[in-house]
Amino acid sequence: MEEACALLSSLEDAKVLAGGQSLVPLLNFRLARPAHLVDINRIPNLDRIYERDGGVAVQALARQADVEDSQLAARRCPLLVSAVRLVAHRVIRNRGTVCGSLAHADPASELPAVLLALRGHVVARSTRGSRIIPAGDFFTGVMETRLAHDELLVEAWFPASTGRFAIAEESRRHGDFALAGAVRYGDRLALFGVAPTPVLADRIDPTHGLQPSGDLEASPEFRLHLVRVLTEKVFAA
Amino acid sequence: MKVNGVAQPAPADPRRLLSDHLRHDLGLTGTHVGCEHGVCGCCTVLFDGAPVRSCLMLAVQAEGHDVTTIEGLAASDEPLHPVQQAFHECHGLQCGFCTPGFVMSVVGLLHEHPDPTPEQVDEGISGNLCRCTGYASIRRAVRRAAELTQK
Image 1 (cartoon, one colour):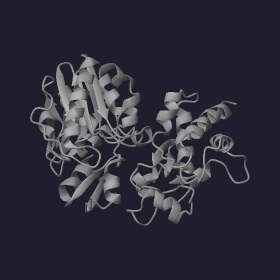
Image 2: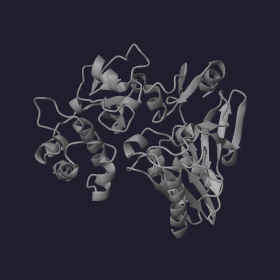
Image 3: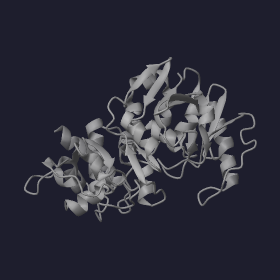
Image 4: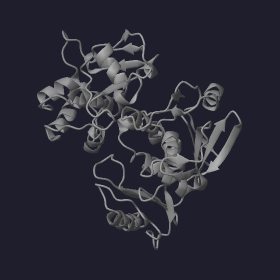
């Protein structure tokens, strides 16, 4: 861990490689060309899923498949387990990490919206020390977060989801990125796929202020339609 | 790393993908490369027993680990692996390009769920694309593979 943090603080233009299920495709297509990769996979004792402050703490190397199968997560935070099952396919989840999904911060990704709906946080570590970043502050733009270039996301914390919860999304094919999605926890609603970051919304007027982008798969109007339908769906659950 | 039980040196180039290392450096061309971004599933191999995409890993990351490719399921003078036998019996392939990936995914699926429900079968093969068979015969092959494995 010390070595990884030291490398991140000393190297110019370094990216952390954990599960690689989002980063390696970007490398393969030359969409990302970092000068250095810091592979954290051999750091010992960084793959735990454990109970902390009544919720579930997921460390940086815990695979999505491990969280999917975790008895603790099923008991304490079933919303997290439901959301993980929507992430790509099992073969991808065998390798992909929960913390990696958060650090990657794809706007169409489920887990950032879950962290936001639950008011969870992440723990960032660097040679300068550790700090907690609340979900509400963490996501700043498309694939951009508050993590500094020398910080490693070592843990995510998901509060217990004891209230009513649901997650729903629409995608062209099973396992694809969502065109739009909604996470409900109690009265809280978080949306994904419709803004540069996951956003909290009002269930009565969920599309208020949204200006989703359009692409070949969905127009902005269709995404707004999906938001209304998915919001109804998660609150009917 | 061990590939199909045989110790192999790491590639000289740290940027080498595991899929390219298997095919170009080790000559194990049964692992196919379709999309190279994790969508098609053709490059699926077992990594310490669990199916993963070999195009989404660097070969150096496999150092100290066990990798099993389609060539490692059954030697050429041995009977087919039950999953291979089932695909053969049920016509679970036509052109065969996707088949190594499907077979490795199904080996992983049956390891986790020896008697999978139809939903588990669909979930288990949903990460692999086939453009020929239409999946019905592949589903049958998974059921047959479960029977053959349990015998």
